[in-house]
Length: 181
Image (cartoon, rainbow, N blue to C red; front, side):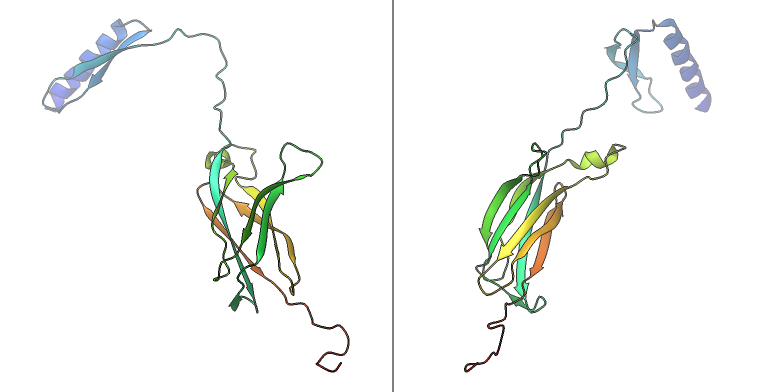
């Protein structure tokens, strides 16, 4: 059986040598006992002295952001908190921000997921690209609490990024305190 295989391989090699440089039959081996049969003819393009073009990567991916707002070091969820998501405008070098979403937390202190455009995962496979994610900024504010401004959240394609924000209550009065003070 090994001898037969060796003979067939020598025969195929000899046939391959006889074929021109631009036409080459492709064979599919069905089983070791059976003879190889041509599947289809492939026409090779003419070889030119062209530099191959680099593979283009589409910088589009979709990621999701969820903001979770609490107080008391994460112990108490805060409902009805205003949340703003934005990012630096990539087409404006002056640093202007692009508004992505204005939301409100539900009774568990979480926002609904917000789908955002981010860079493609494949970008991390290309040398020289340091950031395979997009950065967004979140601001959460409510009367009676110190606002949390411009908290960064990195979003990867096909992933959900959860940003936890702990708001600190403002003091009621700076001096005195109490009901009589």
